Image (cartoon, rainbow, N blue to C red; front, side, top):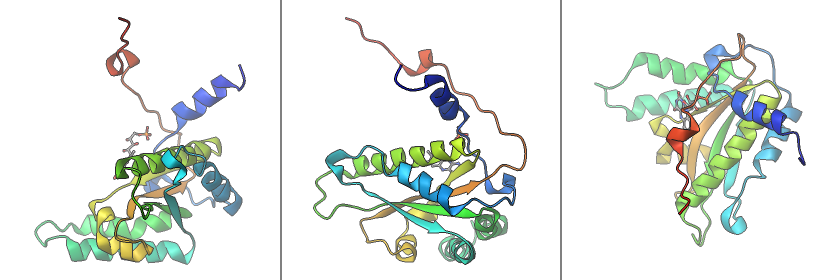
Length: 195
Ligand SMILES: Cc1cc2nc3c(=O)[nH]c(=O)nc-3n(C[C@H](O)[C@H](O)[C@H](O)COP(=O)(O)O)c2cc1C
């Protein structure tokens, strides 16, 4: 064995979604964020386009993000569907974390690689980031409200019209127990073809 497989398995299986409401106020150090992002860069990428881009919100940037998300929700939601609770949640959540990362896909100018593959590459980058967070004892939360894919979001993040924000990734130390999860067994999710 070249690496410690049991440790790798532990990290993969203990990677957990933990929402900002369940974060403690313990601060995440900048070096840890840099390590997580540097690992994210090592995701596979078809044609080596490296389509990921990370907008990192900290300190006053967190309030700026919460204000934007809640206001754009208010603007874009028809009044009969608007929920005050959702508005307040979008506004408050970034400040419950010490770091929030807008995960973006920057579309290659010549569009040689299919868009879905660029999105897949960014998703792999997020997994690298989240696994590194797990190794630090941090929970992460990939949030993708509908407003994620609006042009207002692109303008806010300084993205071009063909780029996409794929989610808002919240990071934090859990204030309670590390949560458990489960998966359907492999027999239900795979098929072996032998002849
Ligand atoms: C592309 C993507 C988008 C997601 N968006 C949301 C979301 O908007 N809201 C949410 O509660 N969870 C979201 N999640 C997180 C899932 O809810 C979470 O991964 C799932 O519950 C499994 O939990 P685990 O990550 O702890 O294994 C998203 C996950 C992915 C991969």
